[in-house]
Image (cartoon, rainbow, N blue to C red):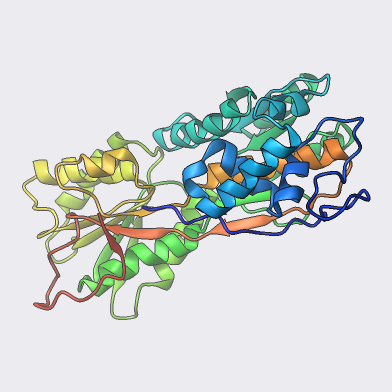
Length: 380
């Protein structure tokens, strides 16, 4: 997927907020070093754009890249100063609490660490193991260590118990993968309901009328949202059954395949929407071992677009989420910078739109129809 160019956004603080002439870089006091916010103000871009210039210059439009680099040179600001500004006599570490170290989570953490390492900031990682008390204990530990900020992939919403103390300690928290229902903190997540809707709409467009959604537990908010989207895309003439699993790995998919394969032909689904790519991979392995052809007998759609999606026996059609980790990291660094400079910070609750990536596990075949209509997705 090609990355979109970074928009040229104007920051809220003008160049001459402290009395200097617009665009001359003299609006700050000479008694303090330049900050990333000064660079953003001088270049006339958002603070997140400065972060992109440092971390991911390929995502920035050439004209914007040149303007930001000119501002950095004019102010004598170097990339290493990000870490110096974050430290301020405190830990320069960012804490991340995730539910587990799955392939999907590891990919998110790789993105976060790439952003932070360029800035000279370390990442401390811990897991909650899907346990709400352990999650609260890990947040408590990070508060004791006085980390500069926390990225949290929450089990549920009990993190609110710590928000007051985090605020007093000046430790911002950004939710990763869950939408905040309130405006008192930032959050970034993919739109799981839209993703589930995309997956099943694609299968319905291929003529499938008996569809099974496989994977996950009802207490998982990602699963609930994806199933809600799947149901909303299922027309009255079609049926959607749900096969839950206790785990989210390849083995869960392989075991589910045995159940699907054992069904009478009149009840067996002609298409499966797997809650993630690992389960989809296991389903494909189990179904092909039982003699089913993918997608001629059973089509499969996964979710997450992990690397495994391109290396399965039949390349997997899947739902690709945007880079939520990068957006969450940018928001956290912006909030830290705002706190350090004494300026206000506006919390953002971002729900990013996923896309359908069509591969061979659904492409090229339709069920009970000779016409192969447009899928509305991207072919990879």
